[in-house]
Amino acid sequence: MDQLFVNYVQAAAVIIYGIGFFTLFFNPNMIKKIIGFDMMDSGIFLFLTAQGFLYGGHDPIVDPELVGAQNYINPLPTGLVLTGIVVGVSVSAFMLALTVRLYYRYHTLNLDEIIRLARKEED
Amino acid sequence: MNSQENKHKLQLFVDWVNGDNMPEEEYSLGEPVFEEEKAAKEPGASPWNRFHAWVEANGRASVKKVYPVICVLLCLSFLSLLLVLVAHLPSFGELANPGFNEVQQVYIENVVEDTGAVNAVSGIILNYRGYDTLNEAHVLFVAVAAVTVLLRIDRHKGTSMDVVYEKEESDQRYEPHHDPILRKTTKILVPFILLFGLYIMMNGHLSPGGGFSGGAIAGAGLILFLMAFGFKKIERFFGEKVYQIVRVGALLIYTVLMTYFILMGANQLANGIPLGEPGALFSAGIILPINLVVGLEVACTMYGLFAFFRKGGL
Image 1 (tube, rainbow over the protein chains, first blue to last red):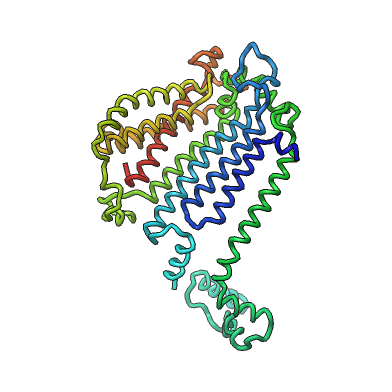
Image 2 (tube, rainbow over the protein chains, first blue to last red):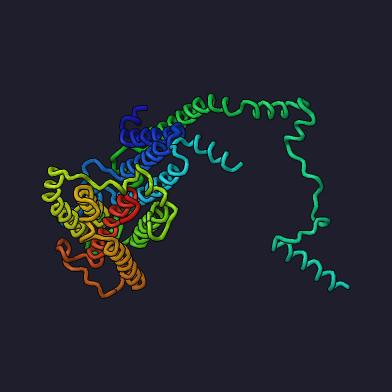
């Protein structure tokens, strides 16, 4: 259990992920679902960057006087997270656009209500 | 005789593919029997049927009652599982972590020599893993295209979002009011914001930053200008035509550069691109032009997304 406080950044990332997951499941509002999805994104990014951190390590801008890989943090998770952020932005923009279209069709953001109206339309 | 039979079968198959003239006597399965009719014929015959009838009668209400409980339980168990996993991870920020293996060592020790970039993250994402980042830029491009398809309002050509324009709550009818404080501040701030965005783009191989963050800053500057002065003013220098040219042109230049770079064998072989002196502004081979191009692409994407959500067009 002590390890949980040593890994406090990862624990925070997991908790953020859990809050996002809960919002995605629990909230019927489409916009809040998308916010939950973005929170899940952020949790994963925080977790990945935390894996690359090193106490006493410099940022990965190579200094010719500071030789040796053990002096720098791991640059690879940072690069991966950059890719992830861009894809996350694209996906949430697409989801929001779909939500706008749904709102103009059904005049509500409640997913249960939208499903009910869509079923009624089908009959 | 045999060939005639085959021909008949072939004809049947062609008809079946075409979906018409389906010969009933060959494919009929008899009268269809539905689950509900079965249940109605023998009510309460088996526990399963009774359960089925009960769900039909008051299923949705009970699901609505049970769903939050299940949801909370599921999420809490999932979260506690993840926390237990975190408690078993290796210690945070220690050199003994499995992440600090020869991959990180190779990247840190060779990045200046291979790519010419002092910033190892830039070197990795734009040179070692350049193909990955190229497709990332394409993802951005496709996202804007999808948003355009969904939200575009064009009253002259007639799209499915035209109904929105007629409504009172449409944003397209509301241009910003004359707000002297906002306008004065914007006039002073926007040149500096755009300049700072350009600085971050061009210094991507020397300091933290690069095309993506610099482009986001420049896009924020454009959005601020748009908020303060409205679409009519911004069309003088950043209309739809300029937007499309910059967006498509930037991605095209990026693709051509990266294709050349990959085909010439990336960073190990002679590809005619000078690496320059590490630490200087004009160095690092293809990283500087790619950072600039990516910055333009991202700025256009940010501005385009905002404009489409706000007004349904540029």
